[in-house]
Amino acid sequence: VVDLNKCIFCQRCMNSCEYDALELSASGFDEKGRAESITLRFNEKCVSCGKCVDNCSTGALNKKEQIVPMVNEVIETVRTTCPYCGTGCQLDLKVIGNTLMEVTADPDLPPNYGDLCVKGRFGHAFLSHPDRLTKPLLRRAKGGPLEPVSWNEALDFVAENFRAILANKGPDAFAGLSSARCTTEENYVFQKFFRQQIGTNNIDHCARY
Image (cartoon, rainbow, N blue to C red):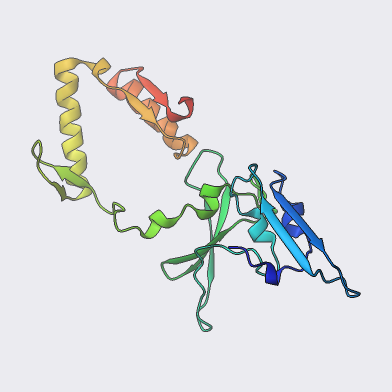
């Protein structure tokens, strides 16, 4: 959200953009250095990373969906790793209870040093989305409904079907596709399971596609 009435033409937004996506100009300066007219345009190079918003000190640039805390509410900062890709960007989540207020990043912390992509900074609506899965779901019959079950029941069902397929069709009936959202350790265990336990080399990674 842009409100140029709050802009003081400090140019922090333009200087912070590594893509040269902001075109900021001003005219009609008075004796105190205040501009009479300020224009701001985002060109086609903009990737919506939000770094300009983070660097705006007056609120001229603001997040479209931002929760404003009440005066007596205490905001807690929780440091975590971005779940979207394998880069491992560090995030600082501003939370009140179970409500996520804002996502920021520490400029001194590797590997991203304060930089975030559009997903890392703004793609967090799934956290409180009503369709988010919170427990295993099992379809007991073809065409039947998905029913919530315990983890033990879900894992037993998968293991039983894995054994049946392995016995009837052999190990090369299986194929595994790993995810960039997983850690290096998780991807290692995934490929080891397919190669040693299942006995197949049919394994790939989503980063190739």
